Image 1: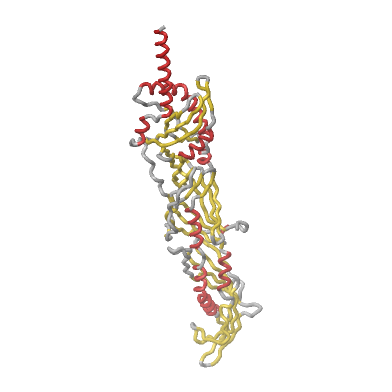
Image 2 (image 1 turned 90 degrees about the vertical axis):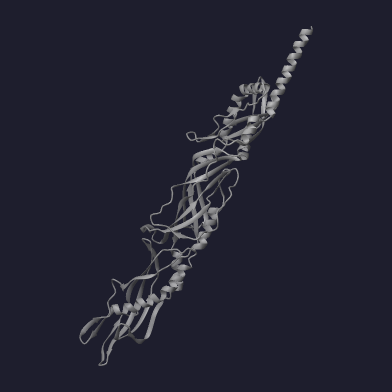
Length: 484
């Protein structure tokens, strides 16, 4: 009888100690994990993303600029009613009226071109010390003589974001169907058309400063500052996903116009940026205000992809996992165990700690450790080596842990991996996003980017950090009439 009681007592004590050890293991964080927090990481932190140059083509409509020029350039360029001596021929006296037609702006190659027709009529005579030798009338009010006028300037911008026009007259010449002006001098016919056109040319040159002033007032800086501010702000682009482009510097390269878009001003801004994608929290912008503008080399081209930093916060990932796992129950030794909570943290060495709070047949926290990786083929975030952590100098704790590993690991790993499948990290990292933002000066910033292509991943202290290559296309173009 005494022997039976002793045996029962031993069994009772063993069960009590074993269950206590199991419960203690469930609540306690294994010593190795505590040590790992301060250990030198096996996977060093990822380097900051390499800054790359992004091409931003710009298309600006010339129609508003042409309207402004119409307001600044007078219709009548010259109205000389009193006879004057021509500066190139002392014997030629002239009276001249010159009126411009509509102004037309366009792009040819990388030049801004202003064209118009000038209608003129003149009365000319040749006076010498021997008397008047000949007179002529060139053009009438009903049928004036006509000159084609073209003015050009390279499209260049100053460091303070203003157009820097350098207008030069390309030509002032008779229109193809305009009659030339000829004077009969002592029976000889003399063509004075070119002499009259030098006067028309001078009247055009007199208006060039006013034209240049209008060009300098084009609101390039306000549009650029508006676009820069838009590029520096963090923007939601998907479920719980935000992006900030973080521009650092900008250069400008004039662009040739195609025949289909000759009525628009063209150029390309090259923006040096280090974009950042953040899942769960809004990324912080560290970009400065609009920098001075520099001229880019004609052969300088931007990258087709930019390297981006992608951050997945543990708190957000744990929240999503808890949504998938909380209330999940499974059988253990014909009894029910339920997941009551989820906690994630980084523990160094590129690993993360996943703690599941259990209730029911087993109460406490089970600690799982693993190294997250990006499965490029499946386009999924995975933790292939996720395992129940058992590490203690106390044998009875290791025995209890091994029991939990044998019975809980298969089910927990399956449930966690199934939950990871539902967390929309994949959707955030394989989607293409559109950008469409109104800017100043009747323009809009549009484009698209993605999908990101992860190239490196590490479990950091406060979240999973990825580096990805992001195809990015951004452009500035005229705003549609209905976009305002």
